Length: 148
Ligand code: DQA
Image (cartoon, rainbow, N blue to C red; front, side):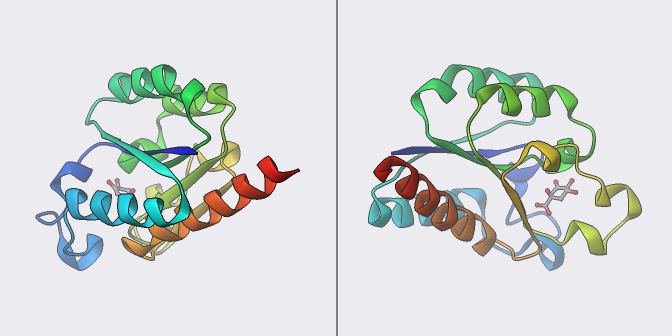
């Protein structure tokens, strides 16, 4: 089983970006944790980060036919990235949207997600552990599906 772990704009700056909001782990550290957890679950994690919406869409288009699900933190594209939303929808894969911070407890403009309506679910405000929770939930659901 293969899950794509995708991060959008500015998430390459984790570890330096406001740590009181985003925590102190770097994206490389989060990816390492995800890959290790994935191994235990029999899931290969393919990770990708870009600051460009087009590159994120290219990655989804090129990799979704070889994958079973997507975990994505779209960064600020969460709030306006309609092309990204369409690409995720077109992938026909289950998508879990993850946010390190609680987007409902911040500025008003962050409370809208254009991704949420096409996502299987959303985890917001649980820091890096949100990615791990998303992986466990997605892997569990995909295993149940493949057994049927
Ligand atoms: C974020 C929340 C977004 O509003 C913000 O633009 C980000 C990170 C989060 O993980 O909390 O870049 O997606």
